[in-house]
Length: 268
Image (cartoon, rainbow, N blue to C red; front, top):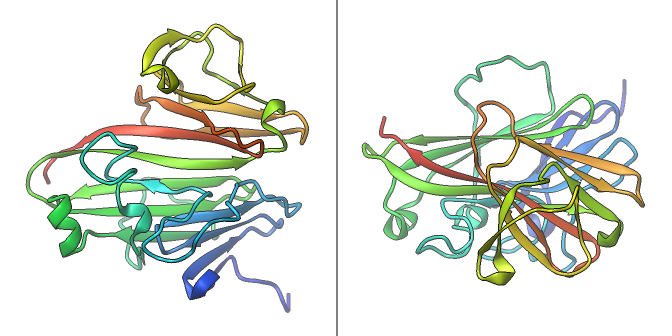
């Protein structure tokens, strides 16, 4: 069909930064900036934006982009000696033209493979060699999937923390509930990481919330009653007892949900 846009398009974004636009035939789309390997937009087939991107987002290195889905690596938060959330989110990634094969073959056409390798300056502040490969896929139903594969090229093991720091766009945080974490223990960051057990049948938001849930399931649901929308947010493949972090930062249009990975990479 003449005028039909391609499923994958490389073009210039804000401030001339290179980005990749993914499109699915039914109308959903996603935008990925090579700066940070950062998903900044995810729209459904009605053109509705599903991710929050701050109006104060600065698309200019070395500042990280505020909103969307930042990649936290090799450190999440302040759990280490590096800068907050590590440095992968404010480095320039490259398009991976020869990624290793995936275990399963997919018919999806709307995807892009990115790769990030440490520079000499990165090795000075975190002396470990690796290849971080990231595939972003837009599925036939508009589902967004991020697949990370981190290969140790160092010759010796190293540990790291990692997270997809996802900012969901919601109507009003008071209309949102998170299901799937009932009866679980959590650490409350607003109370010096004191440990509690979740008592409610769902998480709702009436004031600031910052909790890390332990021993969590592979999938949770985020329900936005006003927009009559449900986000299913989960991890596929091997299940690990890694925590979810729920954060609502007194902004009525954002709900942050992060899946944390606490990993040790063997030498190869």
